[in-house]
Length: 491
Image 1 (tube, rainbow, N blue to C red):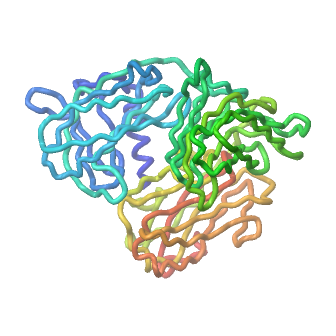
Image 2 (image 1 turned 180 degrees about the vertical axis):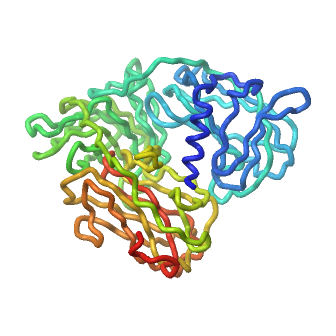
Image 3 (image 1 turned 120 degrees about the vertical axis):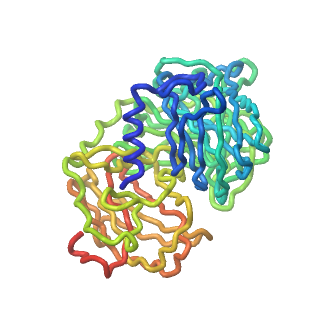
């Protein structure tokens, strides 16, 4: 059974009763949902109602809830979140995380916190400037890669900030960063905020030293670069310390047709400089902007950059979403539980995973219903990462299966690639395109069922999908199996 299906059922039960902060857990609609096999209930501590979370030992098991009204963290003078927490047994790691998701603009926001001992303790987390408002709260206990500690936690009296119902519209170029909805999201551990230089609002990006750390944002309307006479993008940038490499990249993603487009640029010194990038002919319109500073393989330089006045191109309505499949994916054959490792299928029991790890940004996929069957819709990112709660021995499994539907007619340059990753980072990649076997095609379900050599994968820990069929592809029945257990022709 798909774990995400269960979560959606729980969400459907609670969504009409979701609550707004503060939470004292005296109401059933403040019950948070356990994810990653965490068990979450409202219990009594003496005469007091509290949230109880029993961890599963997973790296990212959590409790989460959708708000009726968004929590506004945009006011830096009023965005401290306070709550009480009690480790019952003292057997956990003490390393935790409070995260806000579903932002009106920008990206998710999180802060770590720690606990010690077994007494009640008060946690106060002061979120920074330049934030948004958020529709979802997630609490991770004993979190992080390699952290398999387990404890039971009691949580109470979550409060702070204010609740709003205002809907923030996604921005369009030009950007002068005078509006909170122009705040770009830091990726690859880059820290991005809107700051003041004198009296002027600017975007500040503090690099992480990663090869591809970046700032990114989705547009309300797409930026049209199809007119070669009007597709020069101009902006200002200032290297604050002059410690970076000076090698950068401006990229447009989520095209209405064709592929992503990018141009490199350079900076020198520490003064403001104006960059003009003239994009070529034959392009499309794009829904996402990404700026990479100090970019590229082996480039670990770090600097802080101020960016302002991004303009150019024209704004056009984004393309109408693809219709998608009208029929469900084929039903897989029955197999013994010991002969199948299922990541996503109603036909089998899925292993416990963080199904959308955020390798290429948050929200790579979302679950939708197709003819009454839960199906995964691929969204706007370059890739999806699936992280297993615990490494598994896949060395005796011989085949991989996934059913894919793509609403596309031109498959030149299109890929659907999968990657098996061991705990030590060793990987096996299998690529599918218009010339592979099977080849990618549009308008019907493709059953990809291929032999894979997993004999060395005694510690399979992650699985990735690289897919540039963005917002027009769906998949179901992603699993590995032992070929001797079922006839491949049945698939």
